[in-house]
Each structure stands twice: as C-alpha cells, then as structure tokens.
Length: 125
Image (cartoon, rainbow, N blue to C red; front, side, top):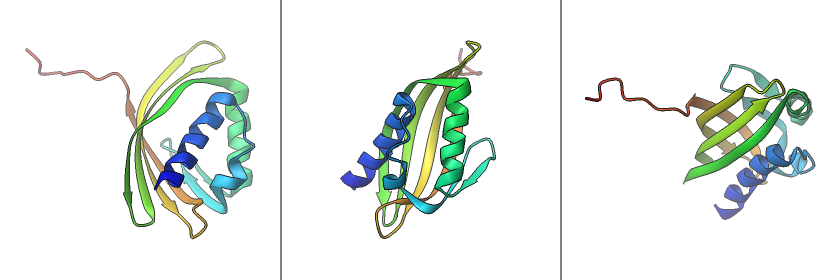
C-alpha cells in the first residue's frame, strides 16, 4: 500500500514541478485516464501530451492527497488542488481518484471526480 501511495504522491509532485519524467514508472503503457471533465486519455503518450498542453496554459499551485483507501487492486484517494491559468484565473477543486493497479503496481485505470473546493451551507441559520 505504501508503494501505491508513493506513486500517487509522485503524480501530484509531477504536476507541481512540471516534470513528466516519472510517468513511465507509475502508469501502465496502456493506461486509461478519465478526467472529471469527461476527457479520456488512453496510453502514456496521450497523458504526456495532455500534461504538456496543460502546463503551457496553467500553473499548479497546490495538489495534495488527503486520504487513501485501499482494497485489493484498487485505491481511492481524496485530494485538494489549486491552480491558476496563465491569465490569472484561479481554479480550486476537491476531488476523488478511483485507481486500479496492474500486476506491476502501475496505474492501469484512473477515474477522476471533482467538486468545488469552496463549500457553502445553503440552509445554515
């Protein structure tokens, strides 16, 4: 479980440091990544291209895991992220990853879900 958590932390650190070098070690060659916006990336090449395109237009400020839940070949991760577009528009999100691991302890499927980071209580007195 520790190795899986470290791989996920490396993925977050890759975004913060804009360094895609560890990609091949943590993702299976035929990985499927389903982004919360509905975009799907299949294979390391598509993830690499998305990563590079995203960093051409945005900057990651904070991305940190909050909780890990492990069950057999799956891990659920809750996280918080803060980013900024090149034009200064901020984006703050809380999210959940549902990850499946292959026999080599690489991510073979990652599904991402998100929610607004700013929470409100509409019925608070």
